[in-house]
Image 1 (cartoon, rainbow, N blue to C red):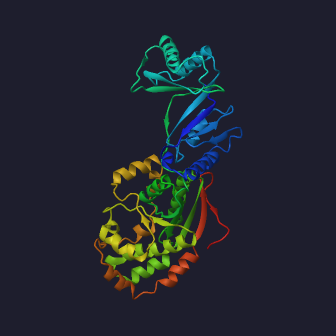
Image 2: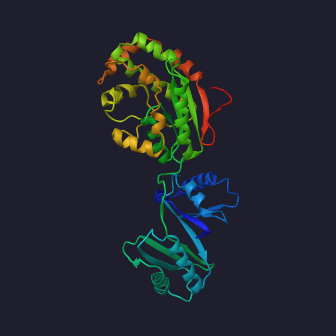
Image 3: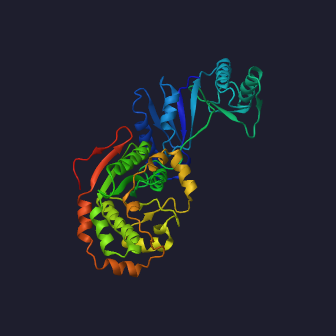
Length: 400
């Protein structure tokens, strides 16, 4: 079946009121970016719908490109017919034949915007539905819950038909909710947290803590590859690689062993907050799931969060590991995360970390150590990479 255009439905964007245009424009720009290789395609939007006019471009590749764009609730390949009864019947039959085996029940939902058209809405429904029943075997009409609802809209210029409804990615267009910094380890959880944040319209920048020689270049490459997977959603993502060795070595020397994990997370959060401030971020995102490890108990989060007033978002907070792994598998980050290269947290994990750390104790231990100069040095020497789906990593013109 040759389609003329693809009809895109907004979903959640439709609930926005006076600022709806901001969301629509953002979605339109993402769709244009995804389809930039197709010179003949045109994208137009109105208040309730968006239209991708194919102008001869095969629809299959376009469907693949827009399927994962956040902000699209659903979409339908559509085609145009001349306003003639025989042409309408012939085209509807070809459409039904193209979907043969994918539906057993159907209904025709006609809408007559052109009131001068010679057939009423009911007459269009009966005419087209009857033609399908007479010419396609194994199908029947179900007006309440059909497998296929063929929508026929008669307008002044032509008749437009949509039927198959393809679920979109949902959510909000990336960038419509502001910028936040994702603390990205090489594990399973944080890439999933990043993906879910992108779905809520957040523009991501990633922060990774690298501790050579305790962590290898392959460990760093794993994080680059994870960022590349996330960048498929939005085009490109900045990755800030923080040199964290000196801070971790000082923690190991000066902080009691069962509190080293708590102090490590606190120092990471301080560094992340400085980077966030320099890059106009509004929040910090982590892959923490409540109770999963010692640093993710409520007591630990309470002690760790003390070092910042910045909102810390935890998209996975109520999920169990199986749920997280299912999403990681779907977004193709699970195999990358499972590569056997450790990050700085796992390398320095104490044998008996405190699961109920006290704020007053960790503050007491840290009061004997001057971390400030090391924090500033780590931030100043952070390496910035721009990761895109099309290429691995491009180093920015300089550090901070």
